Length: 221
Ligand code: BTN
Image (cartoon, rainbow, N blue to C red; front, side):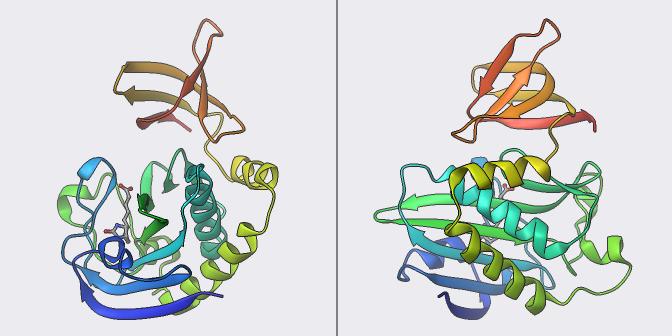
């Protein structure tokens, strides 16, 4: 179903993807201006996986982000990797994969970055890790991409309830977290995910708080 376009070097696969049709997948060996959430940059040196899928626009793009996380998690096949809301794969507390979903006219662009064989810059070494150091061997990027896209295609046909159920099973739910949102910071247990993919936090008084955006810091897993 997906049509793959492979480039050696791009500014950002998400930016490039905006010029391609639905069901295109843009892959780059490296990115010069890789984009992260909240306008952060995403270090994208050679060796990692950098790809963007072009999908039809939807009113619930968060499901694409969930599908991306699940598809990547299953393709990597490492039990200890968990999905952290809303868009990270983590190994312990370190990030191995980030997802950036953007809407552009009639398209949703789902960008996935995975640290596979790339070196992590020294300044990020306490926050991120490459899979080659987890597996203690080089990662076959082509194989990971192939399985990831196959998983993605299959989840696109799944019911939302199944996506949420599978996401929860592979997630960080149960961890003690701190959440930083535009409206303030909260502490508690990452308790649940609601039917719209928002995070439900339970604070120490038992209050449940719906979190719609923000950054999560895990205190204990
Ligand atoms: C984040 O965790 O902040 C999201 C990072 C998303 C990075 C990927 S790499 C492929 C695609 N192209 C980009 O410029 N960004 C996404």
